[in-house]
Image (cartoon, rainbow, N blue to C red; front, side, top):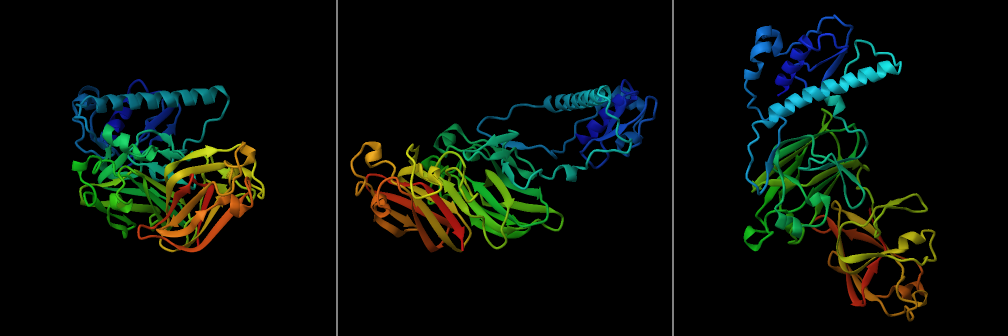
Length: 454
């Protein structure tokens, strides 16, 4: 398709675009356009593409007879429940529209700059190469695997880009029944499946990698399989980071639930790219999203969760992300201020009920800080005394940390901040910190969670 686009551009500038002040070419072996500025009557800059050996007669009379390329380079197969629809007319139409759109944009750009009195750049100015223009604009990268939407916002307010930097595999759209049973997240709506890789350009440095998975096909119905149905390996720069990975098993048998795997000390290879490969063992490999963040050498970034719907910046300038990694329970915000803290607002958000947080980490020991305040029972809410009315247990990776825990009694009353800290918490075999809040009398609750690697 790139050769065909080169041909159409050359044809245009040999005919009606002969005197156009801006000439667009695509050098052989590249995909990024180059803009040449010239005066009327100047010859077309030479290039080294196929057109140098094709006659004007072929360009003028037989160009439309040239067959479309059989290569699927740059294209993307789609796996859906619907039968494929014939698309033989789409590629030539899109190609023609792309040429016309590029010419129109450049014409408008040049005209507007001339009218406003902005000087033309030197004739040697060219567009950046493909490798340079592909470099992400910021320090954080979020790619929604399989998505064709330019940008999507998740439940934490994070912006995810459309699928890019991939090769191989196919885009997967889950069946409607799978969507209904899957977790309500933009990260559970599309995926890339098969044998595929991502080659992500990175600046030198240390990064934290987060891979997002969800089982959106096998196990949705009892006859569709379950554990062991889908297994695959993942490598980063040729080194195994996941081996014989089974999403359902990793999430304790849950189907359609977002599973996140975290990796520290990730660096680009010598060529400036992070190379991620996904290789099937049983059925296709699958990925729903990948996130690359500036890292901390030797450790993962602290996890700080505000149980509210928005991020919170505490008095010590620390960012607490919106509620995430939970299953079960309900979220609520209270109106009464909490005493004994400089950050009353974070204690006014709450998750309550019978619920679990599965917080992804790397193998190691962690300090877990939990924030509590009794903001429901008590005289401020025109209810009876808060003491003894709410009691619950807290388990971490199956070990009980708090038993018959009564927030009001330990804090000395309602509306008072209470922090509980636990050191030396080890990650479980699935590399997670699993916090389960089990009601004893009324509902369990928590206001904020912090996990820091020791």
